[in-house]
Image (cartoon, rainbow, N blue to C red):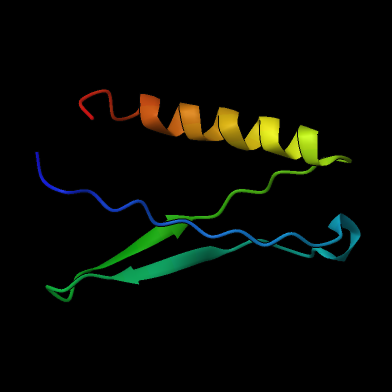
Length: 67
């Protein structure tokens, strides 16, 4: 299997300051472009946010059972 690269980003800020979430972009070495879906996780505590983040990661890898 080829070496894989997981692209991600995190930014923690007050939820009431958030207006919208768009998408990120990637440019591959061959010139092709791809987009990265950005996900919003909200919670009142670090524990709530971490729990949701781990559930999101688990769900992501369920899309790729061959890994």
